[in-house]
Image (tube, rainbow, N blue to C red; front, side, top):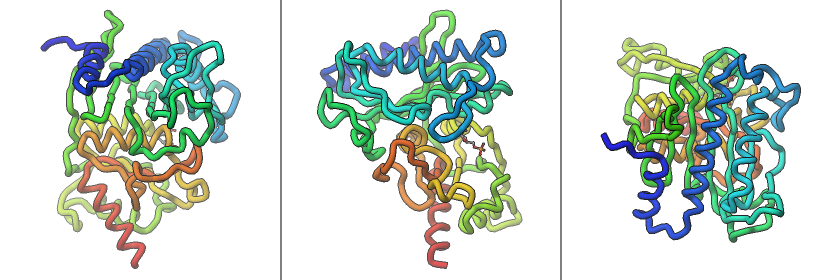
Length: 337
Ligand code: P6P
């Protein structure tokens, strides 16, 4: 098989799309290079002296891991000098990060969760980086919160890296979803799977069952039917997985299908849900839809939501299309019940 590196893939994609400026290609390559540095830091584990808590909280009030802070800094420093960005936003920062005045500004906005699932770091379970790319209304715009408040349908690119047994970069530029594996000897991401596709049906679901008593009735009904297996109304047995690392759960679904749910529950209803719209739900929804899956809040398409805040939270139901549609149908029936 030809070894197509990320750089070659991006150059050929740019040529096919007739894109004039190479800033988007530069952006993706810079993010990929930053993720390689994050992968190296994570891979050192205890030997790197970067495990454990940073002793600070993020804007969500969650304890930050040292690697949360380090990963955020790696992404900021890698991206601020290239002239491709107008600004950045991160789960780890309350306000957007403006490009320092000594550097030129570009037309793209980069949003990211620098280290998703970081509570798994100290127990050596896969974690990841999630990123979303928007365009500024006008190139070099003076950065304000509202520049980021664009619907998920406006994304020009989205991706994640999963730091697992191997380090993978999964990327969409709006023309399918493609997976690259980090060749640690060469230091390059190499194309290992093109056009990932999520089967419309599945026998596997992912949800944190410990929240069952807090779920709304439609989700209670849906999961109860799965648990009844072939004796129940679904007529088949289901398997369950929950890594508590969205990137790992979503990557499994992109690889073999499945349904991921972090639904609205009475614990998180006041915040609107658990997961963040701008740098978790939107990029993952873009990727999942590009792979033939579906992504809703249980009630409406995630990519159609008009954001109201940089750190807004939403319920998430995504994966195999026919299962997402069933959950959505139960919500509609429930709402009429
Ligand atoms: P819980 C990680 O903190 C995260 O944001 C997602 O990666 C993951 O799917 C979810 O939260 C896990 O939440 O409540 O099961 O710990």
